[in-house]
Image (tube, rainbow, N blue to C red; front, top):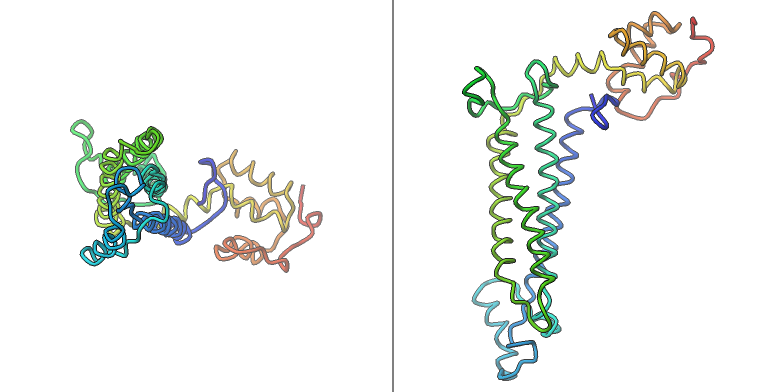
Length: 294
């Protein structure tokens, strides 16, 4: 059952849910690639403040091509050496891309923890792998430690981004003296995020299971199903059905049979999971006035 603001919304599938995770992670990957590309532009030859004092023209022309040859990296010389020596926006951009990935990772791991909560008094739509005992006081308790450790790694990346922003903005005039802390935090970001993603996949996602029975029960008894009825029986009638479902605990299907004059075959069509995951079929619309018993 899909949820908005933690309240029942409309049905969805875990395929759609995880594909959304995939899409946002792919965008994060592209942002990191784009930001990393700017690091390949170097100010070698600019010497102290980008004016190339004490450097020969031969050196300025040869140093970056030689470094490119030795490193095997597609390095280029900065177009404006004074700009490249004093400004560190390229590091801020990479940090921001890492922070984007971190915030998305926090969101995903929070979703996993919530969907795996329980096993009896929570959602328990997902079964997270049992990695270790969760409590020395509560027998049998198992905590979602893998999503938790990944989230904590992401927290650190978000904190590092703040430090990098401060360091970049604190450079004065022709040189920024605070690049060391930026480099240290960026290397830590890369290490933390790589480790978090690998452990999330290996120790959680690869062994994740969907509790199909629980999902079916929650969807069948959710008042959110009434949303799919609005195009057919009208918003007011659908709202009345939803309110009664919440008040009585009865399923939408049973209430439809009791309150609305719709054939069983039409009810099955309206509540068919496939029909709930795509645009409404106008051919199943009926006149509200003829269906209401009261």
